[in-house]
Image 1 (cartoon, rainbow, N blue to C red):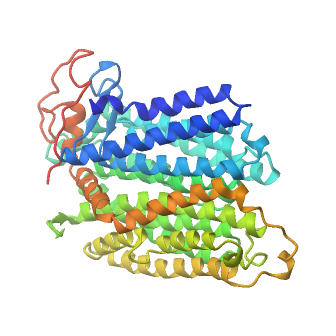
Image 2 (image 1 turned 60 degrees about the horizontal axis):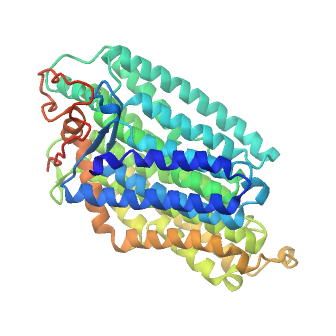
Image 3 (image 1 turned 45 degrees about the horizontal axis):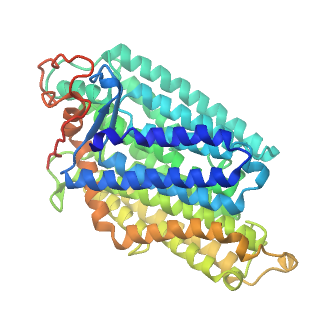
Length: 552
């Protein structure tokens, strides 16, 4: 049964990580194990996404140990989780392959292989867990691995930035644990489906939410906003990603902030943006954050002249579009529809699609940056040039990835931005965000053209005339990793419709959590139903939860 396979997303990287410890001095075997691990989760994630869509938006649930929710640990895979798992596995596989030719042998032996597997274990668990405490656990596994990867080269620059990164994330984790404790104190549960049911009952006229609920919602927004690099909590990111080896930087840029965005989309749509007053307050905060995250982030990118810094700051700017989509999902009310889909679900579908395409495109740009450094000797735009003659295929890969980030039709970024901006026009007051979204796209184009013109089109400066580029035969793994992601990005653009169909299901399930609640808690636990949950013994049903079709 497919629901029993969900746990493999956690088991595969965990086992691979433990085995990689024994292979630390055998890099070829560790590389083979890593490719098998990431390829397996990629195939499994794509298969899950297809199965869920064909089953009408089924929500697959595995109750660990047979203990029923909300008492046990629920592992849940729906359309949103499946899409993000597929994108993260693709990014991990490409970055891992790229590292074969870019990572120094001594760095690779510093437990790079176990750490990257444990990082993926934490990411996958975060996307799959059905309760807040194990979301915290997934975050911590991911962050502890990222702490070690951030300082794996042991350079002064890395350690300086790692200190700030560790300090801020330890603070965020402390606040997260406090928020989880407050949530349990208020509701007596940390199960996301159970919390969503309680909130739905309150919205339907049942027992009111606790007095401290608005403060709890703001606290959790602070926690997830710091991890997702929302304005004004982004200050840790620009000076972090550019210091690490480029394969690790691409992995971080493509994946880590999306876990924070996912946590906001999952928990606030289902739980923390409940009640009109809290919804308007949280939605307003998220909308304001989206404006500044988009626009100030792209201004920072335009002002820099090093490729790594430009790409790192662009991570912030593009997160703003995702936050914009979440704001639409929270603030859209009434019966407005676009193409027969509610405005809220439409905006959230755009957010989901933009998340997965950005994971792929941003990682591809970082990997191309690594190749540019090997061919040009630097990432400083004043010190490189003429790469279109030295490496024409690299120029093609970079240009496609850059225009996908900009959103040039018919590439993948266009469809994500179009959906989010179109949804923003339909929500009162959010048309301003749509305007800033368009302006951000123009400035993104300028920053990408700056990299292209300086790095590829302009003649090589005299200072770089004596530099000997790395032979192409030593860059094969780097080209393979970057090309894989560019091909996927092209696929997301030219075959956007089937992916969008799954994304629309994900958006509808975030707006209407009935299917999620029913799959986790049982078919009798409909939102708004005040009847108590049926008593179940450990090992009873729910080990294979029923498939529930998404509400149209």
